[in-house]
Length: 48
Image (tube, rainbow, N blue to C red):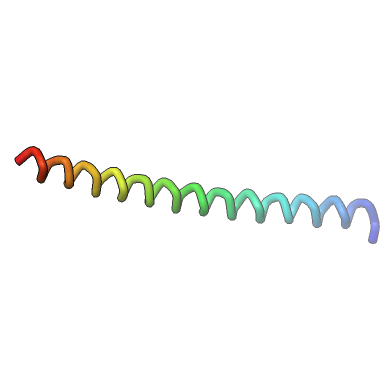
């Protein structure tokens, strides 16, 4: 395998990992937002 082919494969792999990290971050943000909403609803019920 030539050096250029190896470099291209590494760059492709890095981009794939970056995409997976981006998806993971979005999922974490969604879970945190849902948890915050659940927590604020419970707090509102207790205050009422």
